[in-house]
Every structure is written in structure tokens, then in C-alpha cells.
Length: 163
Image 1 (cartoon, one colour):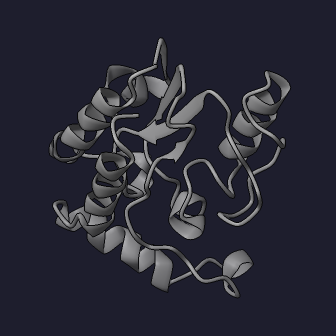
Image 2 (cartoon, helix red, strand yellow; image 1 turned 90 degrees about the horizontal axis):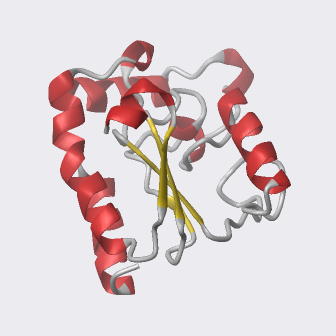
């Protein structure tokens, strides 16, 4: 991936992003007004950074973090059912060192695989507005530019595919 400094700078920029008032309000509200099953957990409530092997040949592009998945855990596809399915499949194919992803500190490592998203904040009803997708697009394009070894890009879902 480009230089490590470029990648770190991009992820830090993503973490500071507040371009989409609706998404900022939603992600922070969800983090404050927790669902009962996660009431004892601290929510991330910020834009979600990407995750994976910077030398990856496989790039997975999802829609966005789930309100009580990535928005809670701070990692893409972590702590929700779609992540359970995805990481089982990645583990079976040799891209992940374990079949589950429950939180950022669970020891999960990806090999030859990198995961990102079309938008970095959980959207209400999993439906981002077109301008929200456009606001996040420069981050995705810069990531693709920095990932020098990518040979295969898999869009997960309609919006991930169209990104």
C-alpha cells in the first residue's frame, strides 16, 4: 500500500470526517441511545477505518458499517450477522486467521485481503443518500490508489458494487 504514512494519514482523515450532517447525527445518536443487548458496551460512534492487509490482492467493498455492528465495534463487518458470514467465508478461503470477528481487539488478521466501505458512517435504515456516497468517494478512490497489489475487487451489495 503506498507508503505507510499515506495510509495512516488517510485513515486519520476519515476518522475526523463530519461532511454528512445526517450521518454524523445518526451514528452519534445510535452510539448514545444503545439497544438493550449492547447497553453495557461502549460504542465507537465515529467513521469506520478500513481493515486488512496493505499488500492485499483482494479488495472487498461493502456498503457501510452497521448501526450496531461496525458503529459499535469500530471495525468493518464486526459484531453483526453479515460479518459472521463474511469472516467464516474468509477464514475458510485462507484470508482470515479466525472465523469470527467480535471486536477490534479479538486478534483477527487478514492475509492478502483488505476491507473497506462505500461510506464510513452507519446510515439510517442502511440507505445512504447519493450525496453521502459522493462525499465518501474520494476516500475510497484514494485507498484504491494506495493499494498497489489489488487484482480483484468484490463489491458486496448493490451500492458496494456500484462504488
